[in-house]
Length: 415
Image (cartoon, rainbow, N blue to C red; front, side, top):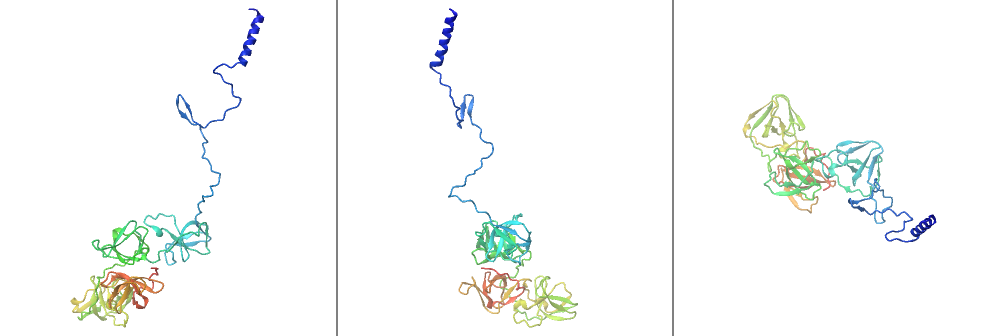
């Protein structure tokens, strides 16, 4: 073939490729296709996801109108150093100091202007409201945040030992698990502890606390969870119904040296006076552990029964003479307890109203512990702690009260 024929054939072949569509071929795209977020399967393995941004996404748009942002907490800040108390009362023990500039989250307030906060310390045994510490709302502190919605609570009063159950706790009518079940304390409830026995039972007053009951009973020591001034709980060891019956015997106590006489048969009791060496007094009774009680020979218009006696320690230097084997054995009232001694039949009510149920009558020469009072002059009486035949607790009008003992510090409660 001549050279010019070969050149013509080559030109025709190029023109054919440029203008003709051959089966199985498609035009080359002129734009780059967008990236797809759909997994791409390959023959060699499972779908492969296209990697996304490795940092967490940030939401920049506002929430829908139907949603609300959570309210900020109520915060209390100290403007200057302020004391924080265990209970919402200046008569309570001081927990510590909220230093100037320090801020804490507020969880509750009382109606009379105390602010409660969590102290941020370990409190394994404390439950409910007992976990809070308290600061008075004064010009020394400022509040910020959602403080209007703080719960208003009744704080536990100062000066009272309470039990705070960590589980359901049975309260018995007597200091015996075979006695009737009076109530069951549940977690978040609390009740006053007014005394204990030598065999580790605790007297519980359900009316002083946050329960709905107005009764008193007993809890085993293994179930007790104490909070407050509980180290000086009195020992309840007075048999119900015991009264001092004059024996009419002739027994005389003579001091061999100057000896101290106390108001109650306990070494820690208040001092009544001194029996000087050689002085003799008629002995009237003795306790099971040897204390000798005598009539002091002074006017005691309001004192009755065993409260008329003054006491001499069995280890003091004295001599007994006469018919002393017949001295009646009594259990004297413990010190530092306020008692009511009935001068006549005294009604004890279930509530602070004479129209409420009468739960007992305190008879003349009976006495019972006074455990609390109200602002309007009603007194809480525990008949299980004294010499009354009843084991109940209730309220006595202030006009019927006849005090003996440390009664100036009876705590004020709201029933």
